[in-house]
Length: 602
Image 1 (tube, one colour):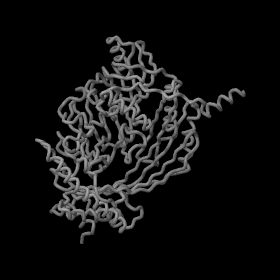
Image 2 (cartoon, one colour):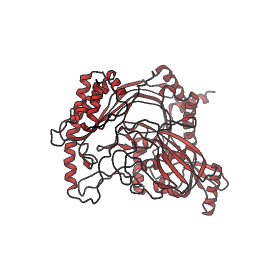
Image 3 (cartoon, one colour):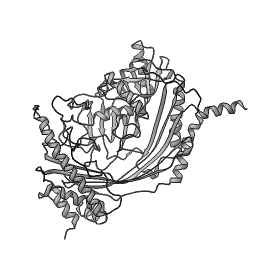
Image 4 (cartoon, helix red, strand yellow):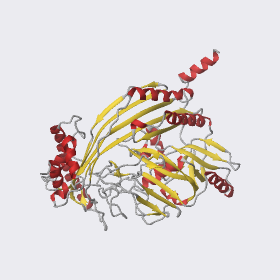
C-alpha cells in the first residue's frame, strides 16, 4: 500500500494526468513521515489544483519555503554590539491561471491585488500541522485571487496594442525529486564575539578612519520547493560571511569608503583568523592611502583591470546582462523604465573577442583547492542546473534563464536564483568561468598599456585594482552613482565605482588617485577587449538583487563566484568628481584628539 506522500505526488504530477512517479518517490514518502513542513506543503499544493471558483482554473502552482535561522554579531573599534538571533519561515506561493502561452505573469499588475490580504508571508515557527496548513491555505488563496485579477488586467492592456510574434509565458520542465537531510551547526557566540572585537580593533590603529564596522552573519536552514508538475526539493541552505566596511573624510572634504567580505558555504568553518585580519587590514590601508592621494581628472584612453578588479567587472556587468529578462506588459502609452539586458536579441552576435569563452557551471564546488560560492543543487523553481556555454569564440550562444521564455532560447536552464517581481524569478550566474586562448602575463599587459599611451600621446594610462562591487557605499552614494549614470549615457544602469585607481606613467611609475568614475561602461565595451592575462583570479561575492549588490541590501541572498584573468581595454571614459564636497568636522575625532594629547604630554 502506497503512503500518503506517494499518493499526493501522484495527484500532483501533471495535475492528475497519467504519468510515472519520479525517481525518489519512496525517499520522499519516508521524509514526509517526520517532516511536518513538507507534508503540509504537499497537502495544500494538492488542493491548489482545484482552485477554479472564479472561473479560471490553475494550470500551474508551486510553493517554496525557507526554514532558516540566523546569528549575527558586529563590532566597532574593539567593542561588540548585542548579538542578534532570528528564526524565519518565509513562504512564496505562485499560482498561474490561463495557460503556458498566456498567463497572469510579467504584467505591471501581476503582484497587485485590490482586496484584503490575510496571508502573513511566513509560516509559524512551531511545527503545528494544522497551523502550517492554515497559513499555506491563505497563501494559495490570495495567490489565486491575485492571479485571476492580473490575468484580466493583462488581457485588457494587450487589446490596444499589436504584437506579431508574442512569446509564451511559461516553460515546462520534467518533475524531479531531491530529498536531502537538513544540516545545521551550532554557532559559538562567545568565540565569534571575541573574533569580531579583535578584527574591528584593527581600525584603532588608523585614527583617520571615522566610521568602521566588522560583522559576522551565519544563516542556516532548509529550502523546500514543490510544484504541480511533480518536483519536490528539500536541500540544506547555508552561508556565513564576515563583512568589513569603513569610511573617512579626506582633508578636502571628499568622503571615501571601502569594504570587503569573506564568505563560506559552511558557516562553521570560516577561513582562518589570519585571512580575516588581512581583509580588515587591507580596507584600512586602502583608506589611509586614498586620503593622501590626489584627486583624479577626467580621462579617455586605455584601461587595465588587474586581478580582482577584472573578475569584479565580469561579475557585475557581464553576469548581469547574461541574466535574461523581459520587459513587462503595461497599459498602452505608459512608458515603463524597466532595465533589459544588453544581450537581449543578440544570440549569435559577437560580444567578446574571438579568443574568449564564458561558461556558467553550478555543479563545480571547488576551483583547484578553493571552494566556489556559486555551487547549488536546485534553483528557486525546482530546476536542477547544468553547465551552460554562454559565449564561444566571442559569440553569444546562450543566456541564463528561468521558466520565463526569452527570445533566442528554447528551455530554462535552472538559473532562477532570486525571487524577482511580477510573478517571475530573477536569473543570476553561479560559477562564472572566463577562459582565454591568447594570453600575456600581467607584467606584459602593463607593458602593452604603456605602448598604447605612447602611441596615443597620453601622459599616463589607467590601472584599476579594485572596484566597489558589491558596493560598500551608503544608500545616498548609490543614489548619486545612479543619477550620474542616467546623465552620462550608461542606459540608466549604475556601475560601481573604482576604489583603487592608479595613473601609470611612461616610466612605469604608479600613482594612486581618487574620485574617478566610469562613464558609460557597459556590456558593449567587452567585445573591444585588447588582451587578457595568463593567470585567472577568483572573486566570491553575495548577490542580493539590489543595484551594485549593495552590502546589506535585498531580502534574499545567493553566493556567486567569478574566475577571470586581467583584461586590457583600448578606450574607456572616466569622469572626475563633480559633486560638492561636505566640509570636514570642526572638532577632531576623539581618537585623534586623544593621540594628540598623549603625544603632547610625553
